[in-house]
Length: 120
Image (cartoon, rainbow, N blue to C red; front, top):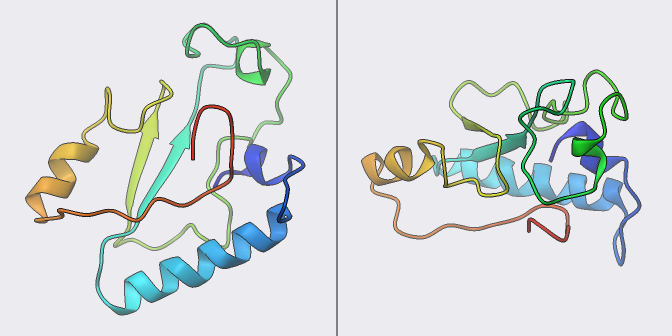
């Protein structure tokens, strides 16, 4: 749930509705002391390290606003959350998420977010 994704058209629910539900879900997880993982994808401004094989905005230098890769304000700012920055389409490949979940004894996950052709 980052800035560039919540401004895209979505259906059957609007980006605002999905973001509001994500806030509710993360609030419930925090209240129960369950880990919350926020994932953001980013790339260099010139697109040189963007994931290959796509023709979307990540591979078109200068096509995204400066804060496109920031986690939306309503979800960000909780120091106990795990934030994963990825540079590929997978949140597990090339990140330490697997290790961080295993160290916490996590055996199940709830996956939520906006629907894309490469993500949730």
